[in-house]
Image (tube, rainbow, N blue to C red; front, side, top):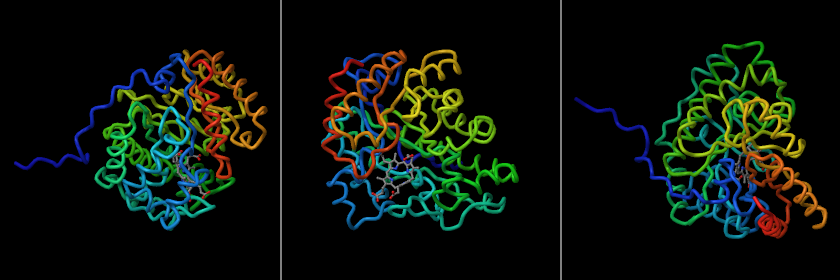
Length: 362
Ligand code: CP3
């Protein structure tokens, strides 16, 4: 009798015991001695050492090279002393690994060679085999050997945000083809979202098995939807993704931009930590979340990344306001920006910001 070969690339790595790491304490709703902080897009163009490494290497090529993934992930940890590392990768990496024709164009973002708009397109979408994620899982192994007590965050794009890139063929301001498709062709939409859910679970499972300490689901463009549409066309799939990791032992962060009206629904999808952009104060965000799920959840955020271009006194005032709102929220607070670090940000301001946040109680 033949046995089916294991689908994972390697046996699950035992997770490091980092129970006291401030980031993980806060993510579970506790109060660490100091307020933990990391930045979305902390690895990237704001760092000269990143720009140097990427001179001759395309984005997806970098994401396919374990040594580069590991080195780029470590750069902001060494430079800023942040409380968590986030794996250097991209939301389109699992699509690329599955064989969907996609590239990341500098200054534009993900561009899809053949947009997916028909049932035939959906049926022909390749599936993601965990073995195709070897560069990612190998990079995680390299990182766990270097990170010491610093937790590592794995991530994926949520099905809706990935679907928008696939249907539009690239970045979109209004998501008009996506919104038309979900209404006019529900079978195509739900088929596409189911396929993306499976790819996303596979991508996150590989990272969890390789030993990441937390996961973040980026639904960056969910804020383009009304709450009713979000609940109907996106939430069930994000809930399936997040529900797959309920018993994984790693906290699940759920983040979107412009999602003030969706915070309750996004928490209902199954998050331990709700990421908040700068448009809603953290204490108000926490109230919306608590009302929706009937108990407190940790919040993450929410300094406007553009504020980092102001003078230090103005930045400090914003940091202290946000820390106070995070404490008032009462369910754990991970300090972060409300969206990614902007490429022109002065990295010395980020280092100073980490020192400032660390002076504040968790
Ligand atoms: O430090 C980190 O946060 C980890 C790395 C990370 C990247 N992309 C690296 C990256 C993460 C978490 C992402 C997620 C991602 N990618 C999202 C969700 C988060 C968000 O910003 O809302 C989205 C929507 C994408 C798609 C994407 N990839 C865009 C819009 C871009 C920018 C295109 C550009 O050149 O302006 C990318 C490319 C990308 N992903 C870069 C980095 C560091 C820049 C590539 C470069 O340096 O040339």
